[in-house]
Amino acid sequence: MDFPLPDRPGVPLDEGHLRRLRERPLVPVVLASGHRALLVTRHADVRAVLSDGRFGREAWSGGTLFARTPESLALAAADPPAHTRRRKAVQAWFTARRAGADRPRIEALAERLLDEMEDAGPPADLIARFATPLPYAVICDVLGVPAGDLGLLLPWVSAMMSAGRFSAEEVGAAHEGMHGYFADRLAERRARPGTGLLARLAASSGLSDDEIIVVGYGLLMAGGETTSNFLAACVLELVSRPGLAARLRADPSLIPAAVEEFLRWVWFAGTGGRPHVVLADVELAGTALARGEVVVPLT
Ligand code: HEM
Image 1 (cartoon, rainbow, N blue to C red):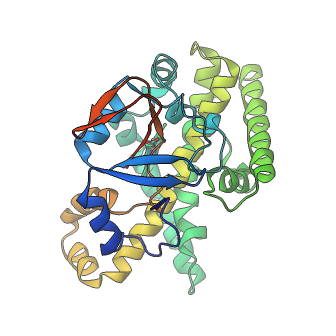
Image 2 (cartoon, rainbow, N blue to C red):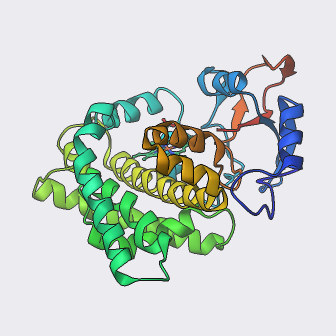
């Protein structure tokens, strides 16, 4: 089986693929890079891969599932101790308390975008007018990067997050552009400290300039692209399930549970998580794995 699954339309996975993934805890697949790997399908085994030091992300050098270089999402591509250090530098900005404090501003922005869409009348482009601007405006605000620059940044994000639509040259050029942009913003924050995570990291983080730049645009993409696709996919699901939409309208207290369930159910073209290399012989799901084998946790 090829992975990511080719030509798979729709948000939920079709029954045939679901059955194949449910049947076995480790499913042999061929990655886009041509490497053979085992897809890890069970929750406990995924947790084991993500937390056991015998599985390493940095050791994966066969290209990524995405057409991007390993540095593009530094956190997702790093092992301890680099991972621990970088994550520690940013994690205080991503607490439930901070999210709660930002909530009124995010709600007001969502309301404004919806009002503008309504005022413009049909047809409405949900992705361009809501699903993209909302999360990107929020993450730009968190980082302290002008949301007005998104016209420049989003085409680079598309190439960097692409699963194969762009050539290696295009992806490389996007990386260069993005790196240069965040290097400029970092230099600005050094000259004129402002608010936002980038300014905080520039002032004191123990991270190198390159790490700050990569963590910065990694967060822009990780926070923007996922959430934007997720919002659009949720609406698609609701449109195709009028019964569910009606239930949620009738009883909005059900919405938080529905969001949790969507987070589990909606899956983005099945790209899975970062491939991990087995660093020392280990048993997973009752199977002995040898050093050098590759596993992909279905995160
Ligand atoms: C619906 C929204 C989101 C989804 C579905 C999602 C999904 C994921 C997944 C599947 C991973 C694991 C990737 C892997 O195994 O390699 C991940 C990692 C990550 N995500 Fe998200 N994400 C979402 C929103 C966000 C947001 C809003 C942010 C930041 C503002 C964010 C930041 C990150 C970071 C930094 C990592 C790497 C974590 C690490 O390795 O320590 N994500 N996300």
